[in-house]
View: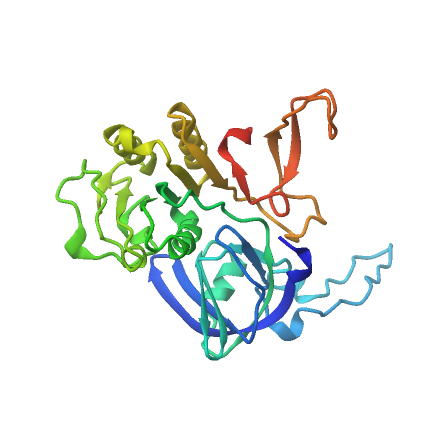
Length: 323
């Protein structure tokens, strides 16, 4: 990505709707925003925009006493750092650009986001990171998302409209699936892996899906990786030009990469890491990858090195990752 396209803007909340237990769809509107691609992410400031640039006074500390706590981040519960979110979609309108996010409430930052009202403003930095490489025009795209790793699969589906694709989405239970489930398209057996038009966000692009829940409360009973394996084994002859795209919990992504490698299928993984800056400055989101040439720096003499999830990724080849 051309780093000159990165922007810091104030966006307006157009929609903030609860999708299921703990998950919210947040739609942000901006007058203009740089070109984005599936796999990329933005950093969102989880605090009022008028406080974004506030800098507390230097700490005055009498060494004979206790320092006085100053700044709302220390005195109360307020997010200091921006939070990274994969794009779940983008829409061009007459009024500008809509950026679609799906997040799960897990802490003070996402709780603040869930309480935003339509019309309020939010600080946004992006677009950041690299993107998914689309499959060949005649190739099959297999999208595998788990939990909060489902949103980038929705954006990718938007770009794959009209092409051969199937989506696999998994969660612990039905009420943690952040999608619009279509009851008429549910499978009759908990061991079925037949792709159906059972998710509105995928079906609008003509993409069928296989839904799995660990407890069997919707769709396939078991892990999404188990459903994926069954589907690949049942359709092995059609997988010659396939490519797998995945995002979600690390254990799930690792297994997806293993499944793809064992069957000779290309795999692209959007890794998730805690990111303080999202721009390669803080060096906090390192991940180990294989090097094509051990003699070449960095870490000359080793067959691996560290890369940054924010700038070298978040999308990596599954075969390159050292989990």
